[in-house]
Length: 477
Ligand SMILES: [Zn+2]
Image (tube, rainbow, N blue to C red; front, side, top):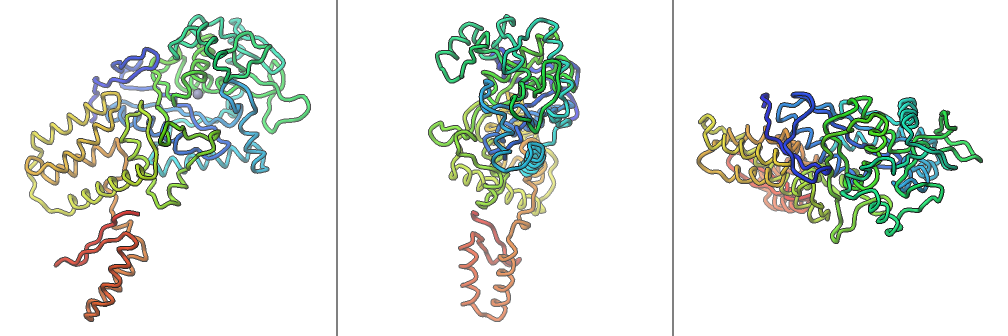
């Protein structure tokens, strides 16, 4: 750490290749991540993408880069279909809870950051709200207008995608085949006033018969900005006309990201971002995606209510490469939690074991090097994890002290709180029972002592009487 590492490679969706990462400015990385739409709780499927972005940032920082991490908060204009049909999602929140759109946004923004904290996500350097940047968006649309890219229909101001020669390059399809495939798929409702099926709204007009909670004046009429335009306006405002990395989930590859790219490049004539990175979906068993529209969402709070440590989910995400689907089941989460707790137990043992100090061996350096190679190889976390378990099995060549130090270093990437004292996790009631059992043993009341032992076991706390006193461990939750 500290020195710049130049051997990081990342898979770029734009070129479909793993590329050596070279930032625009030496030592500094500008990174834009599409943020949450704050009309409801983010679910763990959403958080898989945010966790991937967090790991990306940690890997960049581990390599000595300073990361300018910007994330937007979508609090207006994200319609129920990414392809500009349906209603503003914020309106769904309004109907569901009978509050104003502003109150909904405030509440779910706070909830998002609380959940993010529980998952050890580093806070973006800039977290910017769409509604605070309406003027920037209007300015950007004016530039597109000046360059001849927009037209007006009944619903709003639209971007003519046929004017961008390479529209859709992120999807790997040319303009015609992309439009044809969308028409054939018929998953997109086609507004007959639109010139091309891929055209999208940059400014939506308010309905004529009612006033929205969130609406603004614009040179084209009262309304609200399109979802895509907010990312372009805020990304360029905080990171410059061209920045290094743009990331999100793979659901952004067909529509949202091509649109961001097209309108930004139409306005500025410059490439928006050099590297486009996307995380695959979290799925249930047979490829069923977790999503609000699928009605099968699980939140971070749901995990906690079921007795899981939120970081067990973080561990689970590390077990699959970010570009592979991650299968989420209660069993896989339980297995992840067991592994996490076992790791913390190992850490505690290593910390408490006053073993002789040998100094870093060559083997220790090998582990460090292999770990770095794994994380720098397009964030190969599953491989990096295998080094953790291999290291723990190492018997002779690495001292316990080195193991501990090395794992602490690895945890800068994993962020699993490996050094967390597991004693703190013993429930208050169990602590009380252990104390009562000790009292019973003192007066040789073995019957009571055994009964308490069984009681503890039933709640997942296993105890062992050693010459140094009672030792306990949590089997499962
Ligand atoms: Zn975006």
